[in-house]
Length: 309
Image (cartoon, rainbow, N blue to C red):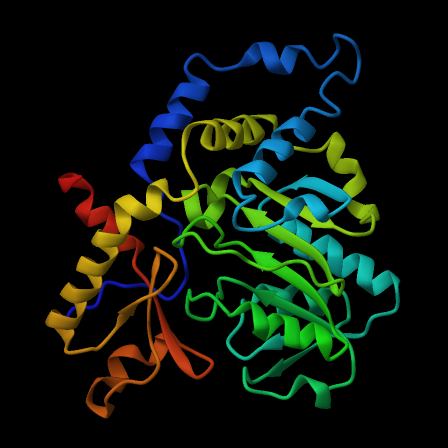
């Protein structure tokens, strides 16, 4: 049995996105960079109209406009890191995550002397001391969308929620409810949905100022912002999903035929998942286990299919 899926989620640099990057960089936009001193500080607010476009682009799926503070960041990781820095300064000692969640929360939290408490998805959050939940939705655990009521119940139990939308744009259109007052920050990224991991393009939205991100008005990627602008000016939020969902389904069907597994396509294009597996294939998939299920990154298969685009 040959299983080419990988455990780490490597974003797929979609051909459509590569074409848009070529349009941005051919010729290279040197004139934009040269305008930084005409007058001095001319690029300080370069990000703001582009963030407006990103907010409008996702408006039908997530109301990001409600957050009074917004920052360009290096993917979602910088936003996660500096929000944790901010919480540390406020005296927060621990955060909650769901079992099998994105491991970056725990890794960064440890550098801020914070304990990460993993809880099962079916935990009664009213029994937990009120605190801060870091939650990805669509979920990094399996690539599937968590119901709005699930997150709202966490908020109603008295917890504050950091809403990680790294996979936003890689699923069918869905309305994510960010309206609860206890959702204090959200992040989005172009890494997972558009294959721009190494371009480090993301945005952080918060209801209060995040002091460590103030300097991003200067320390930001102008080229990354130009690429983000090109994407939201050219594509629709579901363009790539509509084109690649049938391929995702075909990839998963092929894996199941080759291996005897019973994987299902995740809501997010890059992933497949299984809730449980038969004992005889357990050795094959053990490394893919996350929490109570299994997650598979399909990027190598997309690369193989690219020739038939």
